[in-house]
Length: 252
Image (cartoon, rainbow, N blue to C red; front, side, top):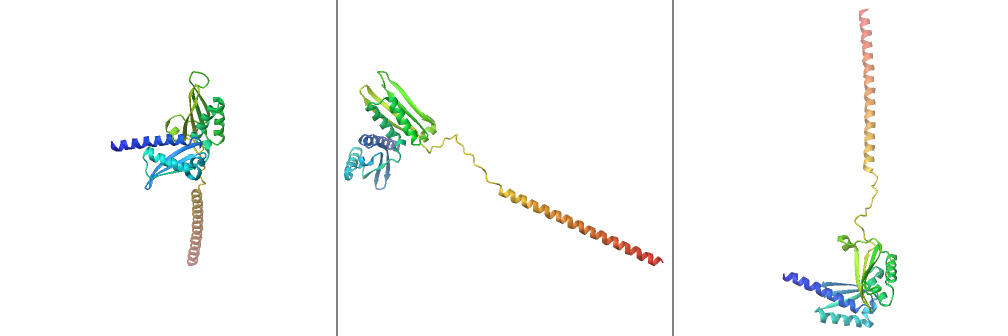
């Protein structure tokens, strides 16, 4: 039980670190967080749309963030680095934050959902679903979904192929939740089958050639046997004629 409790505590601490770093790096376009244990300590890598805002001038901001994480969450020998996201339009955390930011700036939810959906699909995603829920137009809660391409909603396929990001937009009439699910461009669905063309049967051709050669050899052998038989028959007939001629000579 102690091992299980330690694992649960570590998972809870990682979730708290994720939320804390996401709040601190919202302006930089937070795109994810990875935590790895090394022999020298703990290594934390922050993916951001603009990593320069995370690092700060001469590394002052990232050094301050490292000290805060060590003090609040009890890490020792913590190493924090920031990296740039390759394609931010395929990162669900960044796109969910952009949708929430657009709603806070006064965009209509249909305009925000459709524009971000088109931007994600133009970047090469196989499918995307944007869900916006809350008091969108009035006092009653409603949910709107914007879909395009291939979408998997449940099961192991959805867990492996779909990347999900969540954000919140705080408005006067209440909080609006935003969820973005993106299917990666390199995702391969289970029902996709590739039909490959088999190579030409080279071995069979060799076998056919060998069979042709054996047939030729057998035909040649048969011909030789026939010629030998004919020669033997001719010799036998010649011997008979000689014997008959000798008998006739003796009779005379």
